[in-house]
Image (tube, rainbow, N blue to C red; front, top):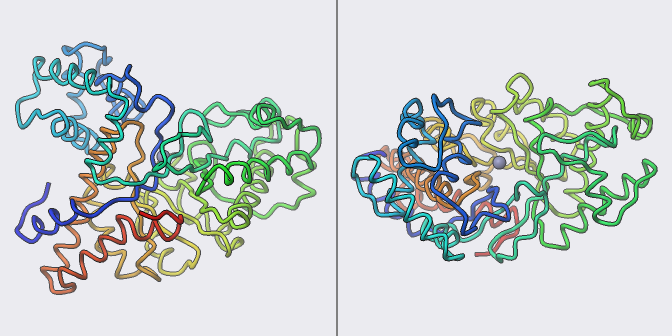
Length: 408
Ligand SMILES: [Zn+2]
């Protein structure tokens, strides 16, 4: 993606360094033999949930090319197409119907081997992965290199037994499945504790909140008494709902510290009126013993996140998703972070994908961006090659190993 002799040497060196990927969404079907090329594209960021298309993508080679037409220049498309070409040996050949058919056949054949998806991660250099499994929070993968991030924001909806989060999850239903009958607010608080402890015992390394997709990420102080008053009232008042949620988010942050889990939190791209990372300030400051892993470097507010990283002692910064949103922003972020952060070993990366092909592409783009920033600093005399590679290693695995307690 970038050029120059120093870039090329650093980029090559990064292929020899293992990665701890801090964020993926692999669910039960991530390596299913039913996987298709078309399904991967539909589910990915190239799909209709994220980008605009003029046509539907059918399971048909003739439909992929017109479907891609309006989004050919987008970074998600570049990253995924490059991954598919590399993984299925398509070289630089023009993407025509014959090539799409060939790729579709190869994807289908590859997924008949249940080890294929994991082998793709290994080809990308990914040795460990923190997984927030979709669509089922807490889904227990038995792959030992997968570590659970426990999607927990459904718990903010305890003001109404029928309320669901944006993923369709309801805390009372999950509680019932886990054998918890909830009648009182005390029962609910007991269940919150059980939910975290139970998954910690099963190997969780993080609690995750993706609330930026459904409400303001700001949290304000709420007393237990106020939360108890709102619990299970079925209130339709958004302010009351938010108050209850604020109490629970603060509680989850405290549970993270209590059970030695990192609190992963989404900020940036989502409901943009209410997802600015600075809106997390009270929650961070009110929970000094909790390590907050701030996702996506808060893109597009990356400069504000750099300022937070300069001052907040309980913040680590995750560039998951960032390189495939904007390689330009990612290069700049990798340049500036070590210059301003309170401590440099707080910078991480994850793919934030559903399928291994996407993660492979995201890892390549990540390494391109990181190598670009490092090589420019080496060329400029700021770092020796060795110092540059040491920083790169920190982003690729050392910081994740330290903060999540994962050994390579
Ligand atoms: Zn995610």
